[in-house]
Structures are given as C-alpha cells and as structure tokens.
Image (cartoon, rainbow, N blue to C red):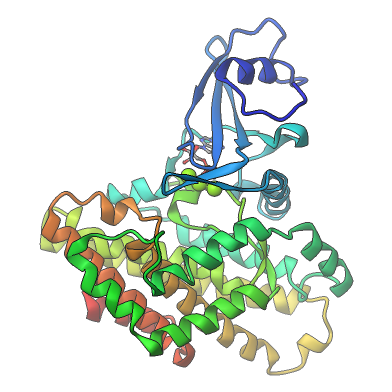
Length: 400
Ligand code: ADP
Ligand code: MG
Ligand code: MG
Ligand code: MG
C-alpha cells in the first residue's frame, strides 16, 4: 500500500493493523469515514474488544469547489502533521498526538478525540467553556511567539519559513477571503435577500482599500508560523479540555490572522444567537458570555505573549525599550482587521458557517447575516485606529 490512492474503509483497517505497537495483527477493527470529504478523508478506526481507537486523516489531491475539482497538493498533509508536531511540542495538552506520518499516502495517524465536540456545534448549543479563553490564549501566544524572530534564532527561522511554504492553501485564503467577496465572483454564494449587502461590498472603495492592506500583510508578513484556519470548526472542546486540529493551512504569516480567526468565529456565533437563544434575556446573556470570551482570549494572549517576550526573547534588538509596545499595538490592529475579513467572507463568500446558515427562520437568518456583515465591515474600517480590545466589544454591542 505504498502508491498514493485514496484508501477504502477496508484498506484503512488493513493499514491500521500494520502500525507497530498499536493493534494486534489479528485484531478485529471497524472503520468509519467521518470527514466531510471535500478535501480530506478522515477514518475513525476502533477496536470494540479493547475500546482502543485512532484517527487516520488522508489528504485528497483535489478540493471539490462549486461542482468542479480544484487540484491541491498532497504536501499539505506533511505540513499539517509537522505543524501538529510543532504545536504539540509547545502545548502538548492542546493538540492531538501524532503517532505517525506516512508521506507516500499523505496520511497522518493521530489520537482519537471523539470524546470532544466541535466547538462550532458546542456554541450553537449554547454551551459555555470556562477554560477556552485561557487555553487558546496560551496556544496562540506560545505557537506564535516561539516561531517568530522573537523566540527563535533569525537563521533557524528562515529554515522554518522554507519548511512551511504552502502556496496552494494560501491561494485559497487569498482568493476566498481577501478577493472574491469584494467583487462579483463566481465562487461567491449568498441569499438573494441580501444581494444589496453584497453589492454594497463590491462598491465600498474605503472598505476595499482596507482589505487590500490586510491582504498585502497576509501575502508578505512572514511573522510567525500560523495555524492558518483557526475557526471554531478546527477546535475540539469540552468543559475541561481544548484541542486544536486541522492545521493544513499552516504557513508563515501575520500573527493577527490566527487571533482574528478565533475572535471572528465567536462573533459569528454572536450574530447568529437570535436563531439559537429561546428568548431575549437568554440571548443577551449568551452574547455577554461570547464577548467576555473575545476579551479574555485577547487579554490572555497579550499577557502571555509579553511574558514570553520578557523572559524568553532571543533577539537583542527587539528588546529595545518601547519596541514591545509598538509591536503589540500593531498585533491588536491586525487581529481586528483580520477578524472583520473572516466574518464578511462567511456571509457572502464560498464557505459559510452553521452558526448562521442553519438558522431555520428565514427572517432571523437574514438579520443575522446583516448583523455579521455590519460587525465585520466596521472591524475592517476601524482596525487601523483601534487601541483596545474593548472597541471590538463596543462595535458588536452597538451593531446588535
Ligand atoms: P478537514 O481538513 O477536511 O476539514 P478536519 O481535520 O477538520 O478535516 O477533520 C474533519 C472532521 O473529522 C472533524 O470535524 C472531526 O469531526 C473529525 N476528526 C478530525 N480529526 C479528529 C480526531 N483527531 N479525533 C476525532 N475526530 C476527528
Ligand atoms: Mg472540513
Ligand atoms: Mg476542518
Ligand atoms: Mg482542513
């Protein structure tokens, strides 16, 4: 089984049995493909007799996009497994363990996290996760600091940049997030009821100039190793535990892109709450929880990032008094701008979010879409003048 081909469930079982020290050669295994099948196969392999289980994730050589097939390099499976191992070395409790990577099959063998739920689903069910902000703040501060020129020798860092060159996946982001939503592109997808909103985006020259700036940062600012796709569908969660999965978009880019992704997805759920909360009081209460989580995520990130800088920086010039403040102020502005971009694309672009799309009441769904766009556009337009995370909370509250 060394020639690349997408595995069948039977082959996935055969492969699992061949992994040393995991299952006995005569083990009775079951396999179920649980991925959404657009980019990757995800096999859940279980041994009912012992309760042991693992996940096999295999990259497909194409993405299914608007009925067509878009070629996509299998090298992203290497990037994903290497990013998981990098993250796991810094935050072992916050990512699945990688048992093995098989380059010929573009396949990663990893820890089964089926006892967690996908955070997007958990937020739609209006659960609260008291450890989340602290966990994700630690994940962001550690992975971003240690891969940057602050936490790593500048020559070693250049080797890392090479290791994580990821042009195919970056192009998806560059087109679907920073380009298509702002013009009448074929890949866009939105309800006809909000065509006025889409056309307003296409004609908003002030907004498009800010997005051009943010896109330029995404293209050129090799600041740190990003996860690259850190939405709430890439986070497995329980009340006690947070696990970040799916870093196939990892590359060296602006730190604010990852932090902004987390914040955007909390705010998309905020915008969708009319569809999920049973009454106005519970909606206000859950929205308050989401905004507190936005603030705590940034605050934890900033505090831990500054501590790492003070205690662990390897770059003498960066320790010039005053530079840390300048750097962190710029990070907040980037975070807010990228958060806005990530909200807008989920309403008018190709890929949507269940927090809003699955709202049954058409009028409530339309209001949620308009609210998400209002928040997203304001974040983008305001990002360069922002000085505090509280401004994000104010923007959300005023728009709601
Ligand atoms: P994709 O890149 O195709 O989005 P993901 O890594 O996000 O793939 O996985 C798709 C789905 O497969 C997840 O939403 C989750 O349901 C399941 N899955 C992925 N990794 C694991 C894991 N380690 N443990 C349990 N389920 C997983
Ligand atoms: Mg998917
Ligand atoms: Mg995914
Ligand atoms: Mg993915």
